[in-house]
Image 1 (cartoon, rainbow, N blue to C red):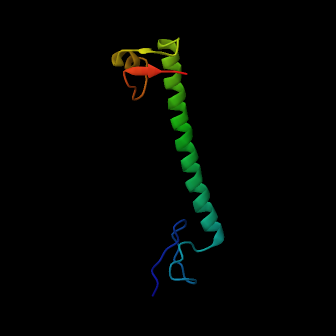
Image 2: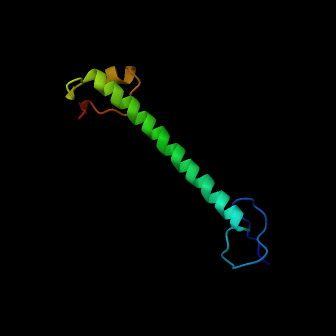
Image 3: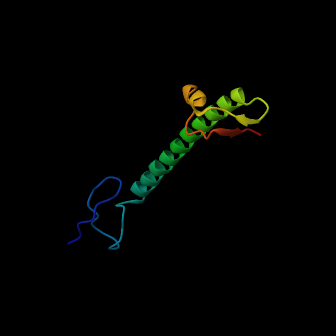
Length: 88
């Protein structure tokens, strides 16, 4: 007897191939859409952090290059900054 369950709705898969992962096409589409949305939201949160870091670097290095103390940028809310900053 096959004990496989749908990855989206967790209903038992009664018919189909032995390696089937979804009970229907709509569950497969919903699962993949949900997975894509997670990737997009992760990417947008990374972009927000990068944008915030860029604004801080622009304030500290208006000419586009320079050396700044790590404690200074950490106080301004920068994430994972090296001591050397370079802005195009």
